[in-house]
Length: 158
Image (cartoon, rainbow, N blue to C red; front, side):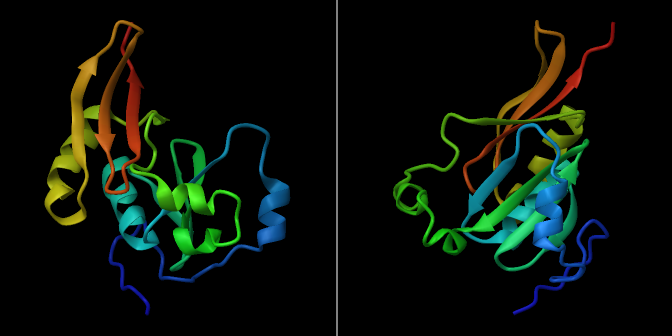
């Protein structure tokens, strides 16, 4: 069933499906992130609202998002039915436990305000308020509805 979206950062479901082989060949060297989620649409909406992400493509099983020069993917749990992580992910008490997903360049104060604004409708919570850190950045710790810890981070001036 198609979910109607009104946010300009979210295209219609299934619109502009990328060619998987061409996309894979074009991925530059570096770290890649793929998050397993119970349902793609709610996770995607939270990341758009709170992280300022733009959705390049999405459907019920998969989404491709980008923000601050980073690109990452979401996959619905069921797409991993035959994957080696299937049993581990299904038995995990908390998704993302121990991992921080840092989004450099996202204003932490704006992300915190957005997280608070959508917590009643999209879920998630602020784990630790935005604060200046001694290592030259301002950051906020946000837990998304799937249990992943996102840390929008911006450099301090000077």
